[in-house]
Image 1 (cartoon, rainbow, N blue to C red):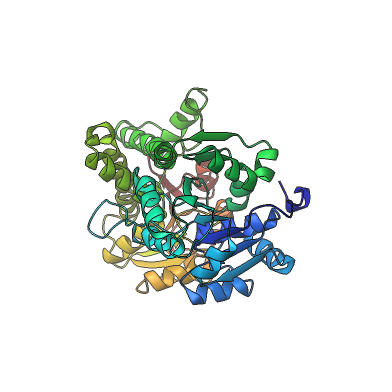
Image 2 (tube, one colour):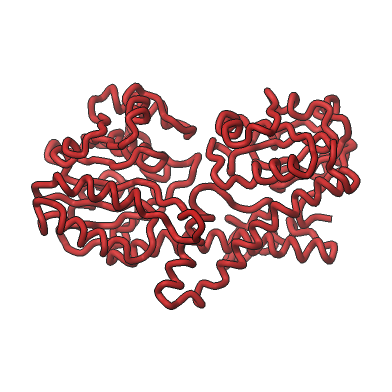
Length: 450
């Protein structure tokens, strides 16, 4: 769907607020305005609000800056730090704040969700729907519904629904405007009707709707992320077996993916998952299941998490093996810092975890990433940073591919050979053609491949 294909919404359509303007909230606010709604974005961070109001997206997401400018110019999108203004403006309020992992625990930190919901509810004086989109432990919605009823001046006229998000960084606009599915967790026909009004342009394009209760809607997101994490870690566990017996995990993944019952998506071996969602979500799911007395049912997720982290350590081992067994003084070119391509997100990024570990073991590590350099420098100032792929690789004893950006996939191995010290490469993402690199005189290694 493009904004040119969207029919203008009716003048009587609900007005929307989006509480929290981080990655999820800013994307949702911009896209809903692009769909024709009047939208007010709300955040306690005045600097972030100022940047968004001036047309600047404070993170990297393809296409979003252009869509933000159009939404602002249309007059349908505004930003504020005022919760009373938001409560007065909105008919439907989307809560999109973060739920990071709590320090020293697997549990989710719900302080932002609770604070945002409370701050909004204090000034809601008429019938309204509050819609949670944040990823939360099962049972959170019921507790927040009680909180809203007790705090809001409108009392029982304010309902809570849950509408989990399923955004992929780098594809957030498509995932918002053409989602695989919409999940509506509701407690009344009115709440369902209101959500159908809000998402009418999306539903009209054919996105299926699943209507369920609050707790199932909460569970859908963590269950989906846990399944994806399990699939990724499964093929990486197979990579460990392949290394032990001399088999090729890439060929194994191709063969498995051709089975219609399994499918090839998320069956790519390599460095594993990271970012701000999958790692902390499976840990929070584990914690909540244990609180509910059913921890045994999802105990396998501990193995999923452990397998994922072992991939990082094994990548370091491959670099050390190529370097001759000792990393001290070895010059390493680390290609990639973001946890995935088309993103500047470095939260729990396997790339930076590997780069920093190599540095701590005595290697001289030089990092380059197409968009995540500023974030990486702030987080890991001790590392060196190149101005380009070839600058980072200049004089390198080992090159290690850590984030599968398209420009890294397309590197000419013969051209890169002219700047490195030694032709040795570790493909941490199974993104390169081994035959092509070996033909150019490179010693090529990858997890789970001979």
